[in-house]
Length: 67
Image: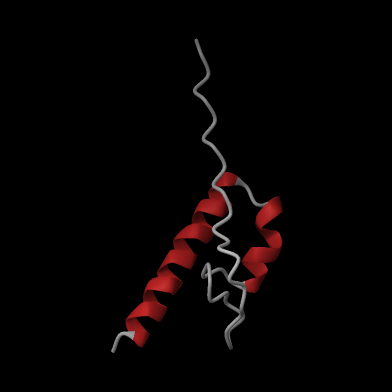
């Protein structure tokens, strides 16, 4: 029986616009500083969780600024 292919590891969401806000969250990609620092050692599942959290942070920031 063939083993299913491993899911590809998500790529870094870095957009080279690195500037941390007052909560140590990157204004460019939405990751917290601790998430940025541990990205390279993170598993696929951890990276997917980081990406989900960063997307949510960016959406919340956009919603605050669009008021």
